[in-house]
Length: 164
View 1: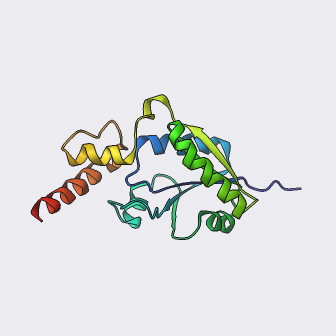
View 2: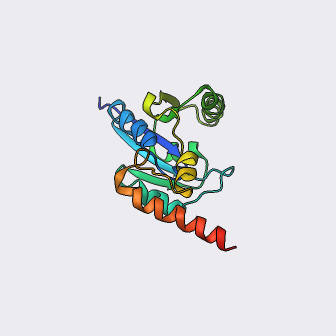
View 3: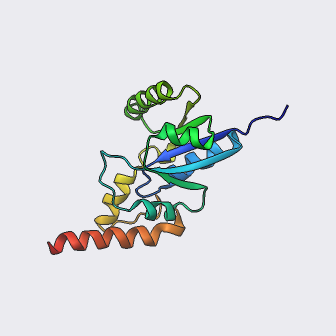
């Protein structure tokens, strides 16, 4: 009997992608046959980058985007797991609630939590945006291939706000 392919989905707003996100994606890959990075819309957040721009910033991995429920996407691609990174206990409270809801909506999926590497524990997209908008160096926090694009966009947004 042929073994079913183990597919995992790594969802996030990735606004923008950071080295912390890339670390979780890289560490999830050996655990599954296929890892899909899914850019999702978070209704609570006001994104800096469009959905398509965020997808382009992550092209180094298998990436997709989806506007509906995460579990609907998971079913659609035949995934068995959702992989989430945890930086702190505060992340766990929210992510645990989401895992329980996802399991209730679709019993065929498990949520796998990977703790962040110590070097990325403090890192978030919000922190990266704040540093860049204030002229700080974000090289240590984002993939080299997207650094200039992120800085250009965040500074452009800052200039537009200052003109208003």
